[in-house]
Length: 461
Ligand SMILES: *[C@@H]1O[C@H](CO)[C@@H](O)[C@H](O)[C@H]1NC(C)=O
Ligand SMILES: *[C@@H]1O[C@H](CO)[C@@H](O)[C@H](O)[C@H]1NC(C)=O
Ligand SMILES: *[C@@H]1O[C@H](CO)[C@@H](O)[C@H](O)[C@H]1NC(C)=O
Ligand SMILES: *[C@@H]1O[C@H](CO)[C@@H](O)[C@H](O)[C@H]1NC(C)=O
Ligand SMILES: *[C@@H]1O[C@H](CO)[C@@H](O)[C@H](O)[C@H]1NC(C)=O
Image (cartoon, rainbow, N blue to C red; front, side, top):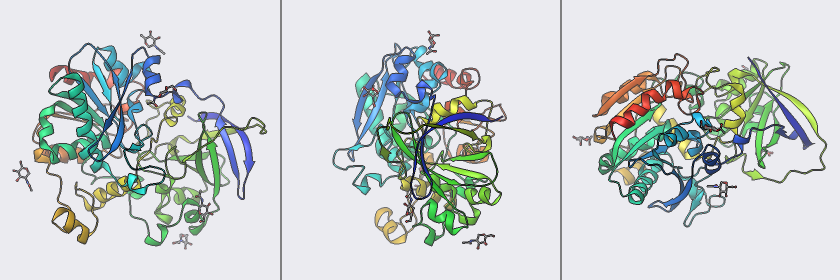
């Protein structure tokens, strides 16, 4: 099965080849924000701001409901609150709101809803981006949780997170154990703490690059490893300019590489001859590596020029090129949904976040950021960062995992389960193709996922 999307070419210029093209028929939901989506699907949405102890200003959305206990939804890396909304009437946020829950959706520092700080400017101040999943867990989550409890007058809430959002919770619960009592239950979907059993391409993507390659961009790396690279700019309907790299080739069907869990197209090429982009190019594929809004290649926005000369492109995504790091599930992530998703991800994250993630893979330890022995000694009192103490995470925790998830692997979650003292439910999704993204984007969540999740909210209310 192939997806066909027609692109409108509106401008061609530059040294190599540069074209601005937009999908001619972007679905409406690709362009709506959380508030607009909530309203479209029948709910009132409030926008709140939360300031963390270290000065980040975060956007928090609420759809008020009749039920007393608030439910707090936290997204994964490179993502936003929108993850829980993109399936509209079938989405987690809307489905919970329809059931009368008081639904709160958070946004971690650095994503497009939370690019603000009391002092630092994300565009000019690199220290704004000096964070990883640790800070999102250590500072963002407690600020959000305390805000919700204060606003509702409740003593505790129900919580759910996806992917790296679960890492944020494991950091919080092991580093600030007083927060265990503030959670009636924590449901961890596609949980991540140990990353020992990764398979390619994820295991390749997270490998450390050659030091001399760290300074090269995608184009430079492509050339170094023997390929011509074109730089294209893509403008979305709402005016963001995205950088897309292409390694052209004779094969007709383009392969699109989208960085689902990391920060840019470079994650597919930093391994040089061992990277996915070079591997595919060597095999003769026409490789397109996309950079989503907000990352360092795609930090631009313009108004479209009405005087340009339109031309149509026939653009075919090779289905195996899409989200190769998350596990492929054509049944639940049908082609027509992808433009909706690409209107919202990636939502922005830090480079340090990727590096910290990679450390967790390479060191096989779930620990704070490794700055090297000297700074570690100063910060942590040890030359190696001490592991997060998961036995402090005493909240009631449910772990839910998919068999076709290339990132949150069943064997790694089983290991996590052994380290957590209070696992109230461990569930492997029965569907064989269930992948990393099906937990938020799967088109059959009401039939498959919610029957696992909603009873837990009923039980621990
Ligand atoms: C969502 O979009 C509406 C309409 O453009 C806008 O008023 C609102 O500020 C947006 N909310 C956020 C959090 O961006
Ligand atoms: C969502 O579901 C509600 C209730 O079933 C329905 O009234 C509404 O039209 C649906 N909204 C959309 C945009 O599909
Ligand atoms: C990549 O690096 C080359 C050489 O420094 C530079 O000319 C080019 O503009 C860069 N491309 C992007 C998209 O940053
Ligand atoms: C990459 O592999 C190609 C083909 O095997 C080889 O010719 C080239 O020297 C390698 N490049 C680098 C920089 O290792
Ligand atoms: C981890 O926490 C548990 C429970 O509080 C405690 O007994 C244990 O000593 C801690 N381990 C380390 C290495 O600090």
